[in-house]
Length: 156
Image 1: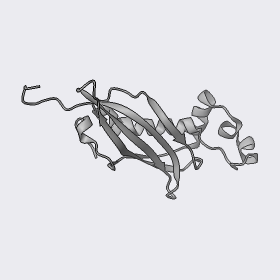
Image 2 (image 1 turned 135 degrees about the vertical axis):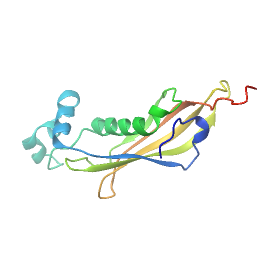
Image 3 (image 1 turned 45 degrees about the vertical axis):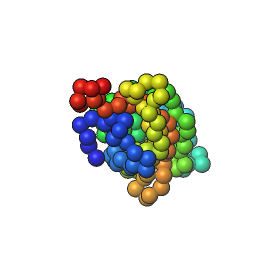
Image 4 (image 1 turned 90 degrees about the horizontal axis):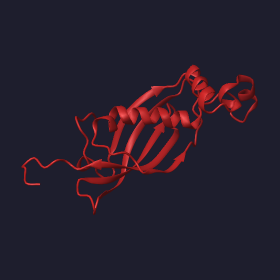
């Protein structure tokens, strides 16, 4: 679903917004991990083969970064986002491997208009990445602040 601008009022509890899919390559897994998370099972074929994973896997932070890009491209980049005070939970129940295609959804879980600042509200959401086998590879739970829809009538 592509909108021109997402305001606080455009979100509702239970809403699931598909934000995109991406196929992960081994080259990008190794490049990301080499720079940001150089654990052996992310960057070394022999070490990864000998690990509990059996092959090179993506860093969880790489998975989160890919999800962030898709959410920005589909929702946040065309929204009244005011940023986020933080995340509550990140989980990686399945490793992401080269060739996996991740499909990501933004699921609205709660809403609260600000009591002290009427120009904004808080949206709680879960971002979920599912691989091509229907397995959940990553979930991110957190909150974001969004501006309220401007008053069109000038009587604000």
